[in-house]
Length: 547
Image (tube, rainbow, N blue to C red; front, top):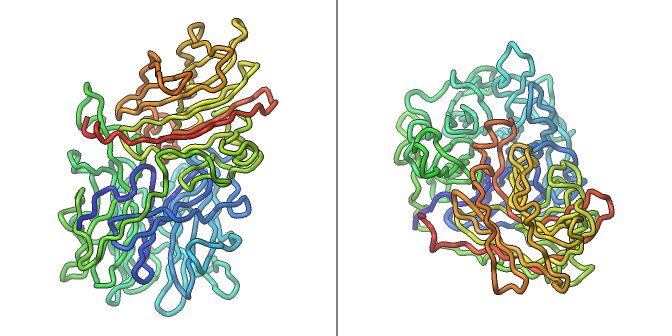
């Protein structure tokens, strides 16, 4: 068997991987999308299955008002003392000199929950992880933020002892154990023990094309005691611009029952427009930061190395002697909304799916969304969406919506954040006193309505409008139908790059998620007009792969 990278396609960043018995688990960042933290499981490191979101209530996670790309940064999953430990950070500021954040701990005896009420630990820095020492002590290891303009904001890696009796940190024990290298931006630390050494794995260089992972080691956990691995960088694609995988770095280490070692890291798969250089810009990562797994070997001096070189490989040898374990699909190609709960792959923005924004039971067989704030809001969006997880796919829905104001709209979205999105929507044209179909795009918070006076009139006798999006890697377009069989393409071709980390990075400090597609209802007139969605269909177009 081979591991085919990425193992978790589409916005599954900052993986924290562990093994419990014969089962592997990966926890990933979710940022402003709710519920918080995605956990996948695997038996073979090849096939992965989404099983739970630990932070599924407001008691666990309150993100209303969080900025774009705020929220859950780099969760850390560990297992000790017969239970799972989850450290997560809720970031409240992403741009500027300050990083207000809250680090929490929650635990569970079963990976699927229930998870305990979170305990707030500190706000020293993000990317916190919990290290369980062989002597029974526990330590929080984290990036450290420095707001002072005359200092570098990434102020090394801080280690603080955690008191299990009081379930609190002991700030008097805090010390900087690792400073990183001259590359700077040291973050994402994880500590391990092996053959008398403590090993620290940490990311550097920013989570872009200069990203890398470095390793240090020490015999103690004293201040500034870790020395960096000499010679080659552990993992980076900075100097491998032609590699299929890019941006590899931040991640975690795991061993197999037979003593083999693997490293799970974030990665990106950028593409180019036909008229662009293959190296500058290096590309546009519309699927966001994904998860890849590389094999690791240890040399005679006790240092780890990526098998095949520090650029990693698309196809990696799977663990020896493991039988392939395939999982049933967690997401049906077509969701008819017959369940009283949302499919596990659907997410909402910042707030949970409750009767504040929608219902799956008020009109059985439909997803009802109550028109709320606009797609530019960081508070109450009635917006249900799922990740882009392939470069070429079609998405389709059917909506019943009777607007009476241009301040009301419902339809199909393709979305990165509050400043970068598009929507094919059913709305109201007051001049013609009729429902119409319009396409809008928000690009760096500049709104464009493409059809304007030529918006498509919805006939009065039409109850439902069918909407479709066709994503074709570098671009995407919309279509509509009044009967679900005869589709008409709209003359609007949108640049998919606008929904990429790399494009958003050019003007914003928060650029850490990935493109989503979904359904939304907007009513900023405040009447909460409902829109009923009959189904949602996501179809990968594998016949277009490579094009």
